[in-house]
Length: 460
Figure 1: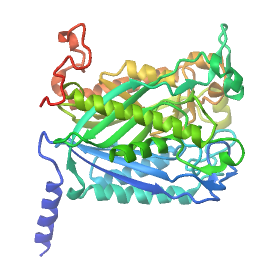
Figure 2 (figure 1 turned 90 degrees about the vertical axis):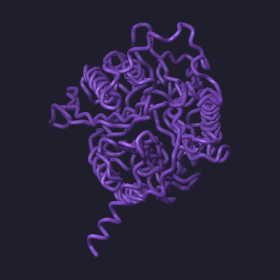
Figure 3 (figure 1 turned 120 degrees about the vertical axis):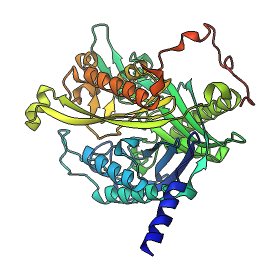
Figure 4 (figure 1 turned 180 degrees about the vertical axis):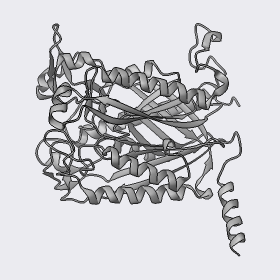
């Protein structure tokens, strides 16, 4: 009898694995419990919620290429401590039956959710405001959802497409003078128009499509902007809300029927153009980004030969990173270094880079430019929460982000190098026949506009 049960279980497990060359996906959407009266993270330890605008969500999508399987999860919370991330990741990986490196957790960084990371006035983990009940509830829901994805019935065959556009919905919140002195102009709204900091306006979209009709089944959007739109003055700053990522998901779901996920980009010094102006601003930002992603889906559908991946192979790597701390943090903590984690996860031509805190968008751009993948998207607060992370010249200029940066000035340059090495290693692992990454595009024409390579809605 026991042998028969084991044989049945083995057959069920094998049936859940797609055949070689067939891509399948499965996904889940779960509510993150957060009741009115919960203390809200983002503006301090003691803001108590008085209303709820919308539910906080946990969105997860898994992709299986017939050999390997990965899981990408986005959580509507400000951030998670590194020990929490590792516990969540290990439990979800075990439930799904994949290596830990193949599970990437990212936070949308909403400032209208519970305290899921430790908070202390000096920036070090003190635990004063940590909402342990919320953390445990998230863990339980995540593990249960990952376990359900192990069921063969949850998976369906898909095609995977990708696209990027420029979306003019964000701005840098810093102004820097000619002698490189920064001002945090979030505190002077009349000066927003003179912001001089660079800003990453790439809206990246990954779409899982029905292989017959090419209707969107699941849409992943990636964009950099602190979710501060919904946090208006007075009572408006005390509402539970997923902010503009919630409106992004809702708009796509209502207009296309597809499920959607928002992955926060390198938003350390980048905010929505209408930050802190309430729900109207959050709705406008989220819906504008959603419409841009829907337009990207149309481009994917109608230029299939260009934007639908022929080999959406998946993989992931964890990268240990020991960072040196700046002097002021050494004095406060008594430690000279901090062990952090970096992570890279890929779905075909797209890589997601998980970072351990709030990297500024300049670092995100540097990572993107050094990646061998066609598109590389940052996953914010993915492997822990170690505050703001700035390049050396931004630290020299000063300002809010630099003041709260814990790392020594050269460490983010080392971080970019470590991530770049990881991206090349992952590229070689998933596409071993390519050699040194995708650096062989010399055969493409000099004028290579969309639709110019095997373009057409009905190409197969």
